[in-house]
Length: 231
Image (cartoon, rainbow, N blue to C red; front, side, top):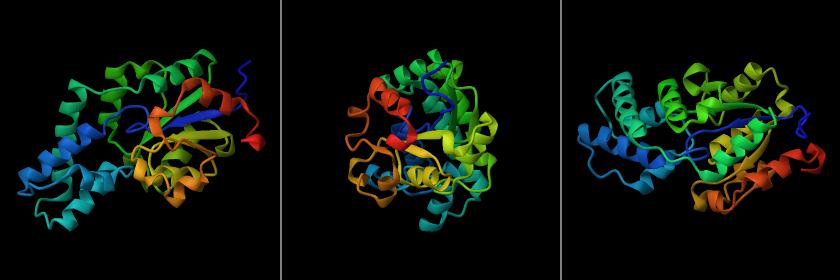
């Protein structure tokens, strides 16, 4: 029997399992440029890390007074992103090792992401992670995206797991807040180092301020194997 007992592990995708933010930035830059907004920067992109694609595009529509319908903008963004994601998406090596370590223990796992279902499928298939991560929830499938707990609670439901037995891996403050709202423990691996002091990250059971540079599969596994009361 696995040393993890009843623990289920729920992964955020973008910025946690894979470094997809450069692709999202480029897709967003292209989408906005097609609407006449040509000065979108990486620093501005960082403001939207951790929230769903639909919510990001909705915020852009208001901020930049874009005339195109929301669904048309979202479709354009998703199309551009998929082209980039299929061409190249980098999996964090220690995260891949962690997934493989959990799979070897027959651990219960899921992905809960703010990306569109097609984008999640493309990344998991293209990176080979789909072999181990077969339970997937998109924010498009629930009423509210992060920081609401909906995607994580739906993942737990599909895994037939008690939320209290779930541990979430997240890179963004809205995701950490969502995990806390869902009543789940969280391993926080901040993508944007400057956001490590966000109050939402203070709710995490394990906060790795150094982000992916600090994360190792073995240390994360050992933390999971500890009794929840000791974490």
